[in-house]
Length: 501
Image (cartoon, rainbow, N blue to C red; front, side, top):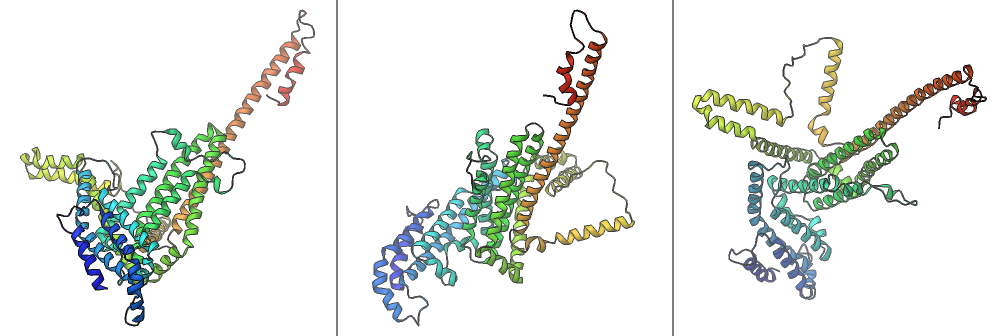
């Protein structure tokens, strides 16, 4: 096998690892990945008829007697080496883009937009892995022994920085897709279409789900397919925590905002607002039911069981999660320091503040720095607010006990490792659906009570008006109007009886 591989590896290095080679381009990872796939398929007949039978005769001495798998393994290692060489450049380009967006005033919040080169390379690698699994069956060997049969995707999980670049790129993509689906401001008709059901009398239960929920579930399923090829359970669990859970939280917030707008509109147009509110509730329940089904699948069930039972795995996930949180905080700090307040600090340090003396400059830096930290941790400063005195009453002690229990519930390990992966998210979505229905019911009750009160007030006014007219005609008859004291009675009697139409 080494004799067969050496010429192919030499050709690979000549085309894709030399700086002067025209085919060695950072923006074209699909060239060397396609080359690996094509070379493996081109030698299928020779490998199957010449080498595989000989390897099968010595199957006690070799781990694998499939020559095509062994050839592909050698070429995959070459592609992984090439990808490892290109990865620092890809990350450096992404880092430059991030710094440019943060420093030069691009208002992207805390979501970093990674270089398209990195995202394109990652997509091509995942597509390559899928193709060799379907066409050649490399996935079964890689699943059995990952060290002996590595994957190119392992380069993206080799260290924390590369893994966080992957998850951050997927987070940015997922939020962009969700925003394009839910927050289409340019076309109001398109925004409403994603929340409308098909007008059909014979609609099934599946058709009662709005298109926005179906697209969101498709997005979650697409993201789930991306982490399936990761090497360890820690990486897959961390991917779900960093990509799926924030996306579910964002979807719940969008549904909550739309539901509350519809609840407030119940007082104006009850019938249409109720229908749209039911659509939002159906969307929440559909996503919750889909997550519950996914939790019972072998992939998520095995992942939850392994992470829950292994202390080593939990510790590894926590370490990576803390490292990721520090990286996110660093990006947030860079974003805040790139604002006008940071500009004020620089001017204070190098401008008139430095002329006055170090004290003035440091005072300005401390003032802006304290505001920066408060904005990072979302602690709003309240002017003139006096600290509450310490109370030693039993009520205060009970409050302290409740706070302590809440702090116990907020333990990081408790929050990270629930009984199942999506347990908290399913409960939150169902609770939000119930809250919206309860709020809609309360709004409808208030609207009905208001209408009934208005009806009663108008009925009393009409009744007084009736007695006034009856009194006028019966006590002051006019000879020119015959039987005028009798004529109003059949006309106004329905009003007295309450039939106001």
